[in-house]
Length: 246
Image 1 (spheres, rainbow, N blue to C red):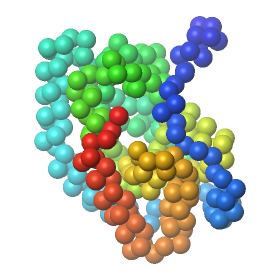
Image 2: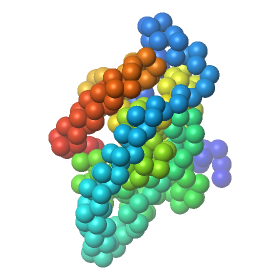
Image 3: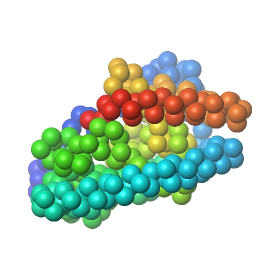
């Protein structure tokens, strides 16, 4: 494979990485965070809260998974080119650790790079933003963020938390570090982020919210941090019901 072929294979849409570098104001206000060398321990109340809530939502989502399995099978029978597994994964980063980030498949198998898929490389699925690449189920799933449902299992497993900086693909994580951000190597990635709940607004992708969350992680009591998490979860539920996924 030539270098041009590799570069073309690894191109990605602008929407894939909306995260901005830290501003001088962030570096000044949250200077102590940039000095941290080790990942932060998850407070026990937050850990317990995550696991109990993840188990609850997994049980609540069980009928949804069943419906999605059936819908995926039916679509594959009716439209053979849309046939394929319901789940897929790529390697993401959470608290500086690599893990399999499971999601629900949105695109047709013909739009997935099989060589990169075998490596767990995010680029295998970069065609997600091409409208004609989506399956009918994938369009519905994305609209209501249902592709994130498998992450309840990852929270229960301990790879993620309900709230924290959104875990991103390995190469995006390295890019985020290179531009000066450190939050994703300090705390567990979240199903919802203090900044991610601002998706669809000009504030989305601004790193100040991630640093504010890590600041609260360091200085708030366990109860105050849980109240922050509950606020973020509530905002996330509102975003889901608005059906603004794209």
